[in-house]
Image (cartoon, rainbow, N blue to C red; front, side, top):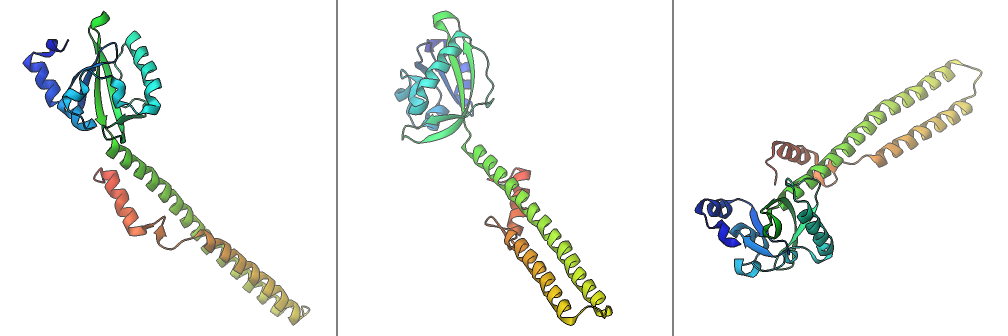
Length: 228
């Protein structure tokens, strides 16, 4: 079956593709791999050709993979890379890594082969995770900023209200000095309690381990696509 790919053009396309490529027969046996796929999984070509495709699948996912492979063979169709899939590959050294796989088929009947194009998306997943973390961090910081504004506005209003009460009490001779002091102490204690509550929700210029300036710079890098 490999001989059908002896044409130099097709061999060059497969050999020079940036992603790993493999062909699998209806038994799930690998019949062809390119060098990129060998490097991706840490095998020599001779170690893969003739082996079951499940060799490259984590053990806890092999049962599911067999069922999916059989379903694809029954109704082969083009599946673009990265569409609703969270897949993992298993390297020769036993380590797992996230992959995206596009599938297509060639041939008919017993000669049908599944064509898989495999891409390591470790870096992409790490960047996406960092983006999500930064979004969460920014949302938290925005909430802290809102609390700070509330602190500023509410406390000023509360202090102003205490001062206004003192002004009124000073001009009202019917109110005893002891009552003025007692009421003022109660009002100020309430203000102090509010301040403490707000302060517990606020942090310094560190946001989840990111200094504010570094956080802004990191966000700009990721938005620009330069972050790694």
